[in-house]
Image (cartoon, one colour):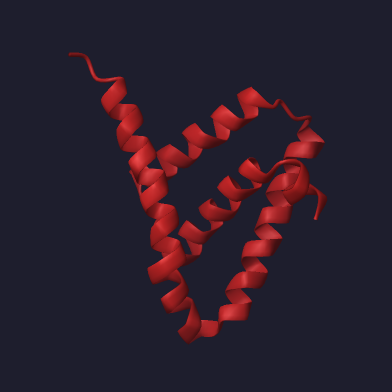
Length: 104
């Protein structure tokens, strides 16, 4: 897929955000970190609105297919592993950013 190939980091951020949604792991911290990561990537590599939309849609389609591939019982294990790994990455980033912005 071209969106994954051309913008792998942004694609992964949107994929992981979708994984958090499917797994019920959206919290203030995880979503705050997703927004930080997305904004950082878009600042580093500005995209047109069409390019950005293409990446978001491609990641959304992939996460939908992956969820369907795991099935209902398989998705529980998927969420316990990949879902929590995505959550931990996002939350660690959010906490690190919040800590670095704290006033001494």
